[in-house]
Image (cartoon, rainbow over all chains, first blue to last red; front, side):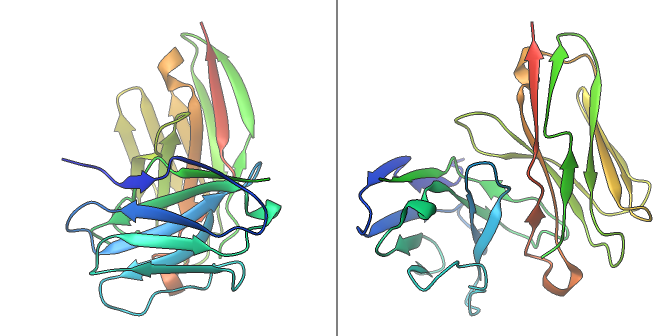
Length: 115
Length: 113
């Protein structure tokens, strides 16, 4: 079956522009996560969606970042007025269980470069 | 967010040799320990999810052990092959938010033919 799908795979943008990153999780997975990896850093938690519960947005680095998940499936991460420090690989993952008992299934990521 | 550390940051291994590396995490209130393999231009792939002290898991030539009392896990690669070249990530969630995995920075393994 299909895995987690992310688009675009690569995005180059100019400082100050808005970008949207899309994630299509595995069908039936109720949990969806966004992480990012900046150069030389570990994966950084951004946001967590679980079913119809309110998302945990505690990892979003600034109010320029927002995310939504429509219909419990597809998620969009939006970065407004991009800055050079936003350059990173943005990874989406989904899971049918909580990480205390089951693995995360990751997409291939969206590499964002802000010039 | 937990402080999860991995060492070494990178290592080079001759094809056929075995190697191992470490993941350290806070031992208090342990919940789970994940290992992922991330090959270039691919998605991170789960290797193991471990929850019990003394756990040992194996997948082909790769195995892992877990010591929750002292807060470390070892990943072993036996008879390294070029396809083992990847970054290996470990992660652990805090009990208060068991969905919020904290990742280490990874160990990048390069297997030389």
